[in-house]
Image 1 (cartoon, rainbow, N blue to C red):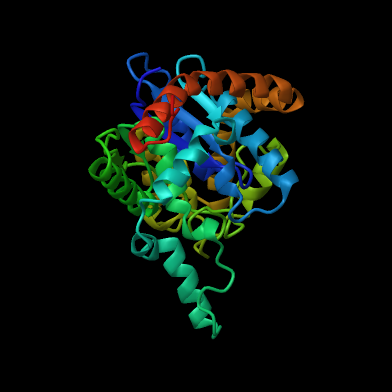
Image 2 (cartoon, rainbow, N blue to C red):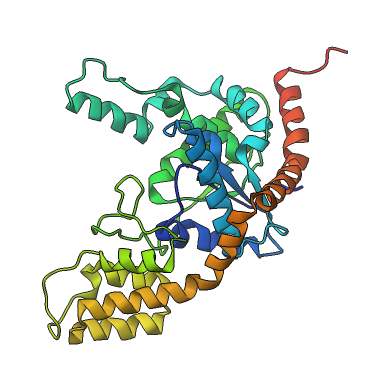
Length: 336
């Protein structure tokens, strides 16, 4: 196997939703089909240990996420699709990198600082209350995920840019102390990628409990879309498409011409009930065939497991010899 041209991971901490699809899954599926690129996609199950302490939820989430990516067309024969925990070289590299990472760098991580700020705001004497070493050193594991395969480009949301910058710092530190083995990965932020709003108008997120599951039943999908908050403007009253959650979701799925046409209907005063029904029908049509494939996969988890194991074998064609090279560089090798 070659170095990764692109690498993307998704944490196994819940059910995939529409926001995950337009933000991460859809572009990854397209990239996976490019025969000129070596793309790596993985289930970040070790990362999920930080916040999720429910073994059943972790296993179910891994199943649902893998089934979603496959059902939506991920070309797992052309790309490398694997489970993080099936690559034992990753945790070993994590420790090697941890021993080179300055605590001060981790002190600046946004997730850690936000938790400390919450503790202080709530008046806790210990500002580190409830903070595990997993949360604190999360960026090092993320760095190991990326550097294990010398990924050249890593697509991320804006909230993950800092972690990629830390990965570059950690890689540069290793290269300086020992030997230049790691590529400094390029951060790829797609400014045009959609960030979907949820049922309440805030960013669609599991944390806010405002998300629409990707492969819920047709009946449930309709019910959730009908619950999306709108303003009190009545039928025939002009409406602003740019401030409407319904329109933002429609725009993420529709073509440019369809979006332009819908925007005009907003200005003419489309009724909220009509818009919700049309949005449901539009999304349901897109998801109809993938939903059927998803349901078949969920019923046959051994098929998914086989795909992930084959992906891990491909990934380890790179990680096993590369870790040996890393170990030799730091002086951990046979004495003979």
